[in-house]
Image (cartoon, rainbow, N blue to C red; front, side, top):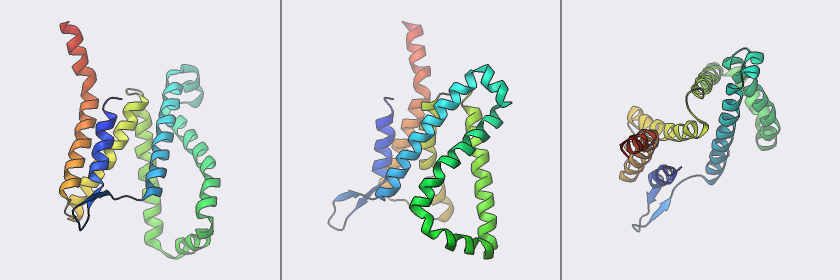
Length: 191
């Protein structure tokens, strides 16, 4: 938990935009920030609940494995989110359906995106067997920074100094978080 301010600070620093007058301001979409924080909170909650289920042998046997447990979690999550989707984007549904019927690249990208997301999250659920919910949440935060840097490299977009520095701080915080247990164990053994 002590590394969280470093990670969040790095992400905030990467979001700084220099104005024409030389002053800095945070550059981000507030709606995206709110929904991103909600998504991370729910992901941490889901990770914690999945971790509890994985440790209960009776439940794990009834599900028939981690893969089935993950599938049930996804279905329940989908059903919970349907009303929110209809409330926020329901008026765009007819437009989406019409585009989906006629645009083959949208069809392909939608299927591939869903498939990759499902596989990624199922592997993350398997990972919960060896890590905790907080570790999974921190890794999820790091993933966003790594994706930003990777996409900048792929698209050729030049990162600002603030984005480079913020990304380095956030990634360093995640690295420190992942190593801190080992560092603390070695100090305890020496004492």
